[in-house]
Image 1 (cartoon, helix red, strand yellow):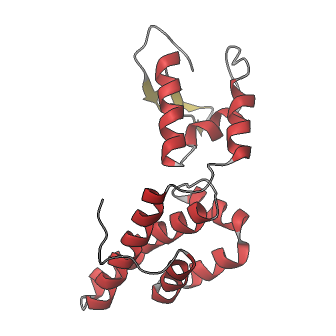
Image 2: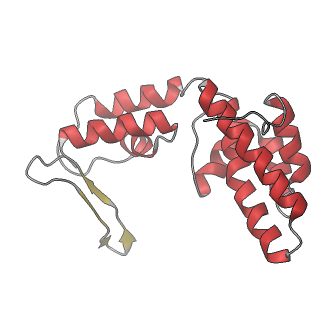
Length: 177
């Protein structure tokens, strides 16, 4: 919802038993949010505006513009983004290799759930998401690989190594950001 008299907020009421999320923005605030999401490759607000239901007011061409952004995709990651993904996966593999505590191994495997998904999507020139949307995006991008990823959730090392090899190999020595 656009409201130039409100600096912006999120409100979560229920309507007829259904949870509703109200996101209130000024035009400038909404523009900043959309630009920030594009830079992060995570188009949550774009998706809501393109696929949501307008309850009040005329959104103009905003839903169509957001739908175009989604359809165009984010493009390939920058060199810095690419190297950062490789570095994080390499560093995580090292952590997993040296972890002896079962709890730590579980936390590392859980961290890989997000990092591997983000890398797979980014390297494929796709948008990145979180939570249930991460799995949805992965299934749309490559259903077979998404299911392999699900089955590797307790021991992700082989899949991480495969993603790293497809991205140019591990990156640790000499990495600088």
